[in-house]
Image (cartoon, rainbow, N blue to C red; front, side, top):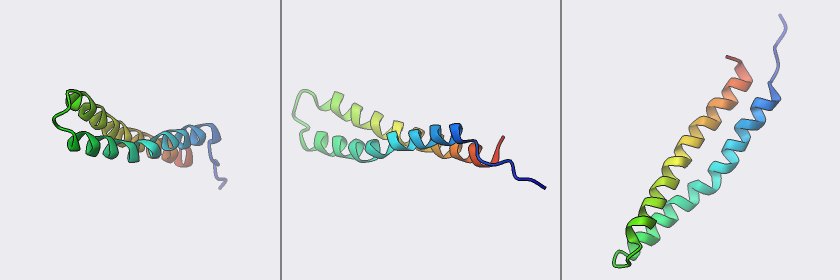
Length: 76
């Protein structure tokens, strides 16, 4: 029985997703925290929304990156 091996292009795509996720995992909570400290500022709602979008996109990209890496390792 022969192993299929790793699909390197798909693996690189998954690692790229995780590389984009890493800064978002830190920036999202930082932006949310700084917006909550400045609730009286007129840009509070847009900045808070931006932080929430960053956190949600980090979760989505983390899931997509891990899923893509699993596809490259184990096939479909």
